[in-house]
Length: 285
Image (cartoon, rainbow, N blue to C red; front, side, top):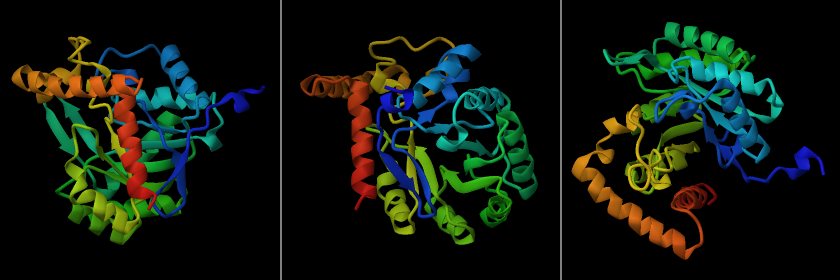
């Protein structure tokens, strides 16, 4: 049996109404170059991406700020060993600066143009399947940002446009300039803020939702409960992994663990199953 036949068939799902189709389970590449723990070697990182692809995942997510810059380079090298036409590649722009001295968000047309050119070069590809504005620049009208992204679609440098962590009003204004195919936000058993406004709006406008941190940034994998959070992890700065709050959310983990035992799976598998089920119920109607 050939390698292609051995691959697990992960269901496909359409994001938005413009034609983007991805594997229902995607792979967020951020952690390969640090953040939640120490970076892995280039060789290991590439092998992980290839392993995910050969298990049926075709939707890979990175950003110019991951690393920073180095994550895109790693993903680009992995793509050289995979069939590009079978991969849906997502990357993001928007963080001009993100370090101990502060944060600077930039959504000006000039920055959009410079960012895509730099990402294409680091990834060593001709186009990006899904290009997100990572965070909204409140000093630049979203219409200006979207107009430049629309030009990039027309030029063939990106195929589809996405937004991350935008307000309902911003989503509406952006979508009026050019259809948004995907909205990325945190959504999991312990983060459900989007369900009142964002989910109905995206459903109304035909925008797909891409949940990030479906495992609660590793919490439902045991981080902070049965596993120690690494000393160099950014997770230590999240309130939910600190002091009294961690003690409170541990009770949630124990309930999920008990339910997972009942169903013969791990807490992480149960958390993913919940997100996949809710996503299917909402967007398959």
